[in-house]
Length: 215
Image (tube, rainbow, N blue to C red; front, side, top):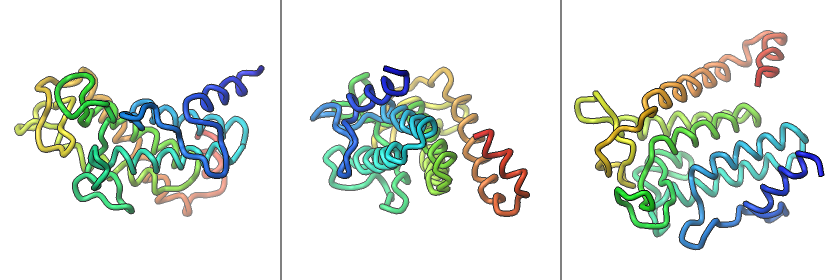
């Protein structure tokens, strides 16, 4: 079995084999989606699409993104979206991480993690670069705007690495070791991608080709 086939087999095991009615299978009944794992899942499907040109992998990446937004972008009971999020702007309240227990400071407790959210921003950015649909990168930017200052202290001199689901209070007092660098890097990536897409139509054909080859 070649590497791509093994890769696909692993993804089928984790998320279920593709069909016309495919939805990613839940990890556990109490933990249907998990932000960290699903961020890598999206990137994996995009890699499979890029390597094989099989459109089904691109569809799976898109469906997985929607599932994450429809589960982790809502309260734990699924009754409402977080904060002022909407179907069109699903990330205006951030994203839960999807831990099995109610929110709290513990490692198995739910909440919003900054370094999980930046991974999701990266997945959304990659989706835009591969699919050429700018809405995903825009969602990433909206996610930045929704959560950035919530994770910062009142004097804006430090960050908290874990916040409550509604982003109203920190659940821990410590700062993630690389959160500031992670955030800056990801914000610049999102910003640069947005600028490129905003100017894409005005580029010369050789400039478009050069940029797409880099992607």
